[in-house]
Length: 272
Image (cartoon, rainbow, N blue to C red; front, side, top):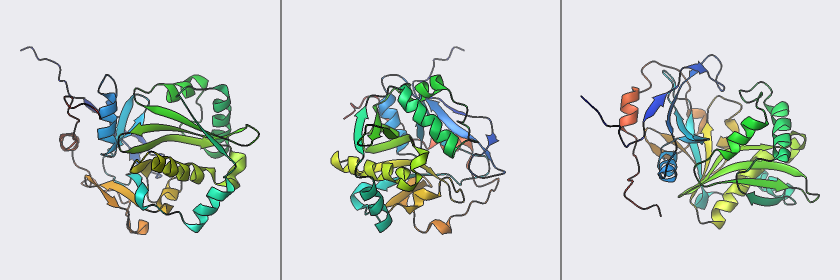
């Protein structure tokens, strides 16, 4: 019997590999290709369901016995900076923001290398060369921008690769000058994205994954008006200390059930 190929996106699962956030765990991702004239609709729809973009792939953690990763976003209308965050904004008020097309430059790559060497020398991206960096930035089938931050002398201090969704800004990847650690540039980039979202009347800033118990991801819980995606819906984070990271073989639904609950965009509805 001959079968026609389905029009809906096909979902796949990666092979298990060591988790970069929690020692002794194995991570696995559910993913689908992001391509064609429906790419923006799919990116919008799946971002609202906890997925993240990496080049032309959308993925979501789907580990066999762990649910410690939560997609996080800030409700822009309700966000109020803490005193510490307000100081970060004042400290970096001299920086000048510039939004550009997603096109990699040698200046950006040099900053990216300093950032990795200074902050993530043992991470999975530590060996990236300029061609892989260019692919990370430029291989995007959706509306993306590079947000650059320069000091008054024109030196590049920080960069964020950002997707423009129909309901917010998705911070795909950010990096900054590690010698400016006391300036809290990672925090500043998030705060400035909240400001950009307000300027554009967008309700959310998507931060990627928050992982309770991970020092690398703990900072995200310090932002107010934070929501996390769990049990198929966005909920206020509540008390970060109340989240458990225990692994259990029955804590995760079968892949088929997870895929069946994914809501796909209607290709017949114009994007608006």
